[in-house]
Image (cartoon, rainbow over all chains, first blue to last red; front, side, top):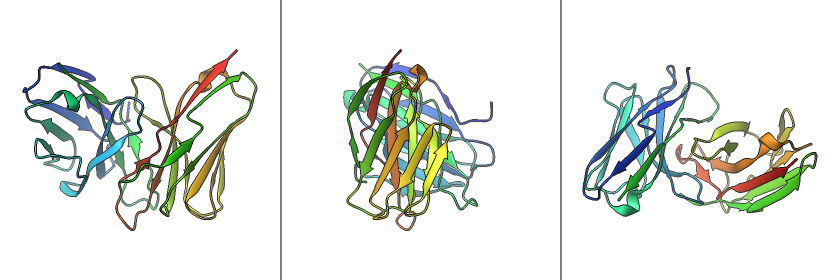
Length: 115
Length: 112
């Protein structure tokens, strides 16, 4: 399968714990995006990388959230001291910068539940 | 980012009927994308639009980029049960960045 992959698919944690999610983009894609989606809403942008550089961050990305893409391939999203309000689906997407098209392809998501 | 106005919120139709949904924005976009999302899965890209007035088809799906650049429309012809899902519009202005702005979705139910 050459699509975007995310791990884990589901995560249940207790409030106050730290969690980390991984995203592997489509292999030739050099742009990678993180979005968050809550029930009944469309995805909301969190941040995006071009290669290893984090170029854009949303105000939704509080200081408890940190994202990395150290080698310009896979990315991790860490949430520290989780809160119940962090419960959501975390989606990763990727796209190809050299294409003139802005199509973003999404992974299956990681469903986070904070108890 | 801004949230787009997508309507209708939900539709309940019979198999074989045509479906229309639309999306409006207060800002100009240079890209409109339409996605379909099944429960527990990520959105799947259906159609991408890049020019004002552009009309693009993908099988039974047809989408249009509004001439004002502030709206887009998606039509599904001859609906079938597997069309069930939530359809999202997303707009982007690459001159301002690459964050997609999404609508709240249109939930489509199709009865056989």
